[in-house]
Amino acid sequence: MKISIFEKEMFSVIQPKEEILLYNREEFKKYIERALDTNHSHVIIDLANVRFADSALIAALIFASKKAQLLEKKCFLINVTNDVRKILQISNIESMFNICNNERECFQYIESQSPNC
Image (cartoon, rainbow, N blue to C red; front, side, top):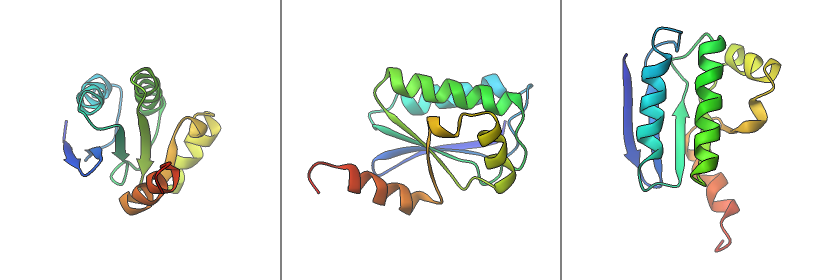
């Protein structure tokens, strides 16, 4: 599976470079676990290269949300295309995530939620 995972400031970032389908869903979930196992309290899943959503992506995202909650971490989705967002809405999982347009918006959101601001 073509995917990038890296750490940036207060986030671990996962960037799939292709669609998440049945054949690569488990591998994607392993990347999610790896990102959640870092010391960062936030994980960004960048869906810029994901143009299609089916049950495989939905299942992987539900896994990410539940695992993040167990670890008391926040999971963000960024660069979500309109088509993928519609599927998230129809699947009723959109509310499980903080959805931002880009990384900068995520940083601003976190700063606005911080009690020290």
